[in-house]
Amino acid sequence: MRVFAEIVHANGFSAAQASLGMTQATISAHMRHLEERLGVRLCERGRGGFYLTDEGRQVHSAMLDLFGSINRFQSAVSEAQGELSGDLSFGTVDAMVTNRALNLHLAIAEFRRMAPRVRLSVDIAAPQALSQGILNGRYQVVLMPEQRPLGQISAIDVYEERQNLYCGRENPLFSVPDDVITDAVLAEQEFAGRTYMAQTPICGVDFDWRAVTAHMEGTLILLLSGAFIGFLPQHFAEQEVRNGHLRMLAPDRMTFDDTFQIVYPRERPTRAAEMLAQAVLRCHRR
Image: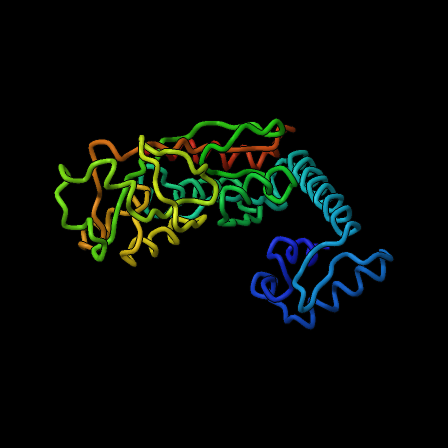
């Protein structure tokens, strides 16, 4: 069942090979045995691509509920024994290492000292995947930008991440003075946006969306190409600015803050999830 869960997460047999550490033949054997034991076809795979059958979606949903129940049981037993153990699944977005105001590495080190027997799984994913994962039980706690309200989660604000508008050295605006870069000029540029953001005006400018990506590294690649302008976290862009590869555009007005939150399922979080969340809050700006 865990092989099946990873296949669904990776959206295919081939894509799941690296995370599972298995060959495609071994993965296929696991799936064939699972389908034989359950007596249903769970997914279709082949030249037409990978997709879940109706039965597969039902089994996958029930399976995630089962995994969540197992995790809660393990947490309850370890609490009764006086020492935490079991698994903790934590998800967050990319470009966290350069965020020295967050100090996520210190929080993980602190958590490890407090719960050495807990096996921590860290996954880097897009905000959409994190939101879905916290709802379907893939993650027990996530750290991500604030998303539209979801009735089944609880969220704690952690910090504000400054986002600025940048272009690469090869972009025509790289050498243009800021007093010439009007909103109208920016609106004419090809813009690299984010898949989880609405295509509405940002900082008063109705940008011309010509590329999208869910990750900051993807945005950086697009900006360095010189073909696009786009927003990046200030801490993530700083080194490229110092190296002369990026330039901040209209810094007096093209900037906004993203609120980052720790998010749990609305049901009572496990003690391990609470401990990691509190470590993140304590280490913020240490």
